[in-house]
Image (cartoon, rainbow, N blue to C red; front, side):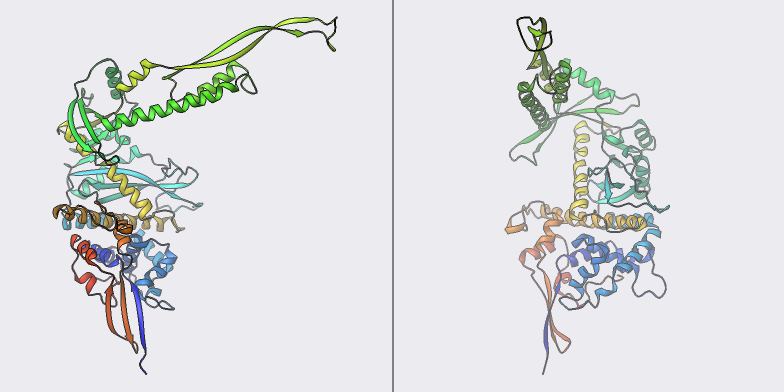
Length: 558
């Protein structure tokens, strides 16, 4: 009697991810830089490709990667067959081999492939850094690995050790092209010179515009880049003399602002953010200082200040009836409480502590009161507070709302300098993708050198995700497709993210009908018209999803 069996295997976005990985020639690069030892059952290249795919598709700890992979390789079976080869020990050994490899040359080649294949424009590079937090002791540091240290933790976990993850992305599609790891106690200001030098070597040129946040603004950093033929745009911190001098001037004088650009607000529908610029005198090194006024920032500054004032006044009203009792009996104690409340708004709220004095008789002789008792006069003090807004200070502050200064050595128009700097927030979104969508932390690995190698794979994964998002958005624009209904409940999005795409493909699977151990029919199910449109927008060939073979999930040399 013939035996029939139906087997279902997961597909979802893995073929798409493999296609973009193959475009970058990842398997061959891993094989080139991380060769397997003689007699190995599986190559390090395949193990590392599986780890990258796992990070992108459904990030799992090493000990669960085999379980994740069996959904694609073995389907619904009692015991894994193909996936069992890729256990956590094998994957960990691959990470150790990657750590020992020439990762810098690897990064140069894979970034070069991304730039040439996807025709990325590398004329404008944005840099930022974040902290990757580790929970655990890590008391036996590897002398060759990056050092896990306590530092300024951007995850608000100062109790935990960390490393600093610096990332460079192109303005064209916000695609990562390089990264660097630094010891956990490294401050951002010292990372820019080695980072810029690395970018110059990677791109083979100096004439790109390097854009970073205010930590870059040190004389050493700016003169190094400018002195070596580079261009930069960054922001001037508020504690610098250029900023303080302009703010003082602005409070007393009118400034001839020039209209720069208008941008529709991404947070508030129907509102337009209007930018104006004013170019001040150059620094002693000849760098241009461009002050920018943002109408949206002006509203935010006003709203933020008013909220602080309202909060302080509410606390003063709450404090007033509590005076003259417990720990608020003296003028000194009251002043401490008032100063604490008005710490952030002391220049706007003028608080006076009023003293009322009256004379009272106090019994001076011992014992119970009687006709022979003696009394003496004593002054008794009671305190109250009253407050008023300093209208002049508020008016001065309102004149400086919405201001931020940029510094550059480029010859671009002030409006163009601003336009280029405005891409900086997209780098923060890439950091967000790394920490939330790709879930870079927590890290379930004990050895520091393997963690460093894993963070290299996260960089590769972030590059692939960014390329996918860039491709679909670029082709949506060229084909004038405004929205795609790929969100939950069929809702639309005009800027598809990797998380949206991954969710939309979750039900795509591979069905097999097996008769007496032989597959007699296999078909990919779950691909609808909208899936086909997305594949076309991503420029993925039809065969990638329509003609899957039984071993389609494997990574092989191309």
